[in-house]
Image 1 (cartoon, one colour):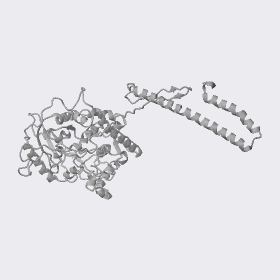
Image 2 (tube, rainbow, N blue to C red):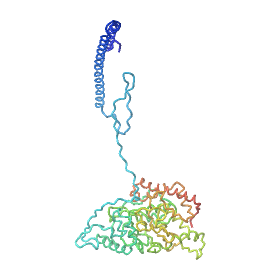
Image 3 (cartoon, one colour):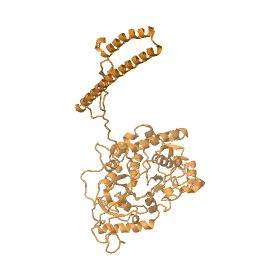
Image 4 (tube, rainbow, N blue to C red):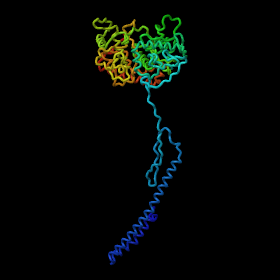
Length: 535
């Protein structure tokens, strides 16, 4: 724009050129000072009014032009379709526009933020206490229901959980309180009565010892797709797993000296003797004890071989179809004491004394004053290693003296935690042998706790243990524990699916691997020996 294109500047120059001579003439003439000042003031006021009129004329035009430009830019944005916006949430910044004076001007862009779908956290099934929810049971087709129901009143299927034993608890909701199991374990007479009611109830619905309650399935629930099974599982293990997972149920009966019911599976008609004495029975436990299956596979992989075969199975007569652990019934187990559920009565003081004497090591017969039992010294080391990895505290620390328990733990419910001041008199529980093999232990009731943090582990389980089995420690060091557990647990189809597939199984393996590293650190820090224990 040239000087002549600006009319405001031309007028200003013209006014100044005309007024300058007159101002000089009035200033130099001999007119009165008052008159001269009045003329100069009048000229200044006129010029000031002229300047104000020029400014008011320029500003409205500039404001109108700015609004016109904005309306055009917004109209262009609204009319532009959004087909070019990616739906994956990756929007790149707009390219700047070049203005008239050469500067970059950002374009008018409407940004759209796409909120991604929130993913739920993975749930470790079988380790988190399920939520309590109401169960609506189906009325029984017959009239009275369980014995003891009111006359003329239809009782719903398994309506009263408090009237059932642990075996009946399989049919109850998973949301039963943790104390329910502990209270039932203390009342043996009540268990017998409830088992009788249970059998009477099944007779009403058409289930008896000679009636099949589950049809055969074409596909086995034990998946072995290779030519051979994993090397750590014996042929007897595979056969027992297939029987418990696939065989028909011919009848049910009360489990002697145990808490639950026995399922009698179909067997060869030519077989003689009792079915349960030939490995054709399984102890059905509640769904909360599903970690028994994991414990069985871990025991075989570590080369301990001290647990009974266990599988997961669904039953038609169980409410909601919840899978339950089924453990092979071993009729050769020694009778147990009602108070400690052990075939050998030991307290903590006697147990620590046995560890110092190293009973039966190298075939050496212990002296009478040593107070040794028939159990071999190496058995305690294997049990301690196994219990630490799974944090099974019921055998060596039933009062929860070595860690901070939760409110729902049995030791808190029974107020056993208050008796930790006198730990020497606390009895060990679930110390069981076989009648024909008293040197070795049989590990039962292996309920694991995967939700216990690393800073709250029960190290009392390892107290007094100065030697560990070489084979088990080598597996923990080999970095192949995860691979073997995945391969072994995959065999049990029902358990694999109940834990959420591979993702859920690997969550459990993560916990065991972290505890294995802590155990190896403990062994090195305390100078414990790692020796062969294949006597």
